[in-house]
Image (cartoon, rainbow, N blue to C red; front, side):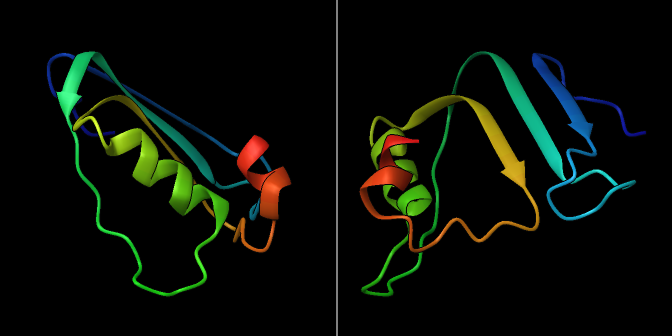
Length: 83
């Protein structure tokens, strides 16, 4: 395990999205709003998580990052945005 930077917490677990016995879901949490930015696809078709991330990062700060493996989360339409 690696040391966590001061002011941040980290957790990971095997949620079963992609792997049954390996971590495939992670959360990084900041004690306070931190400067945040992202790089996104320029593809004309963008999945709901991309649209949500763009909107959430518009203010330039974030407290948490949730990372998953094994799920494309694409082609979900309005239902994906609602989730």
